[in-house]
Length: 101
Image (cartoon, rainbow, N blue to C red; front, side, top):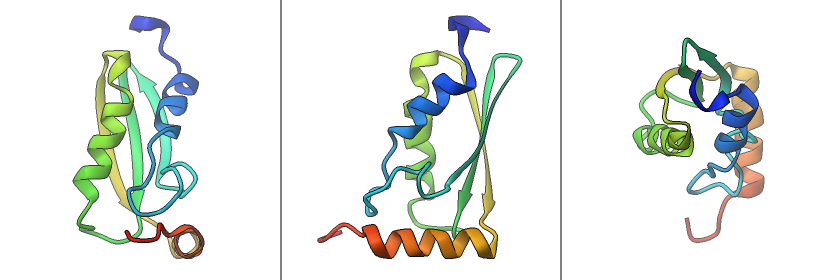
C-alpha cells in the first residue's frame, strides 16, 4: 500500500465531508457505512436514505475528493438505509437543517 494508507486516515478525510443542506458530516449522518483498504484500493460503502436522491453524484464525488490525497483507486458502493437508520437520519436532518438551504 502506497503512502501507508490506513482505514483511520481515510476515515479522517471522509469525516470532513459535510452534507450540503444538513449541518452534519456524512459520517455523523450515518451515510458512510464501511471503509476498507483492499490491495491498495479504498473501498467505501455509502448509505443513502432513498434511492435516486438528486445529490447522490455530488455526495459520492465529495467523498472521492476527500480521499484523493492518498493517490489510490477508490470504489464506492451505494446501498439504501434500513428503516431504523432512516429514522435516525431524518431526526438529525430535522435538527440540523441549514436555514436557507
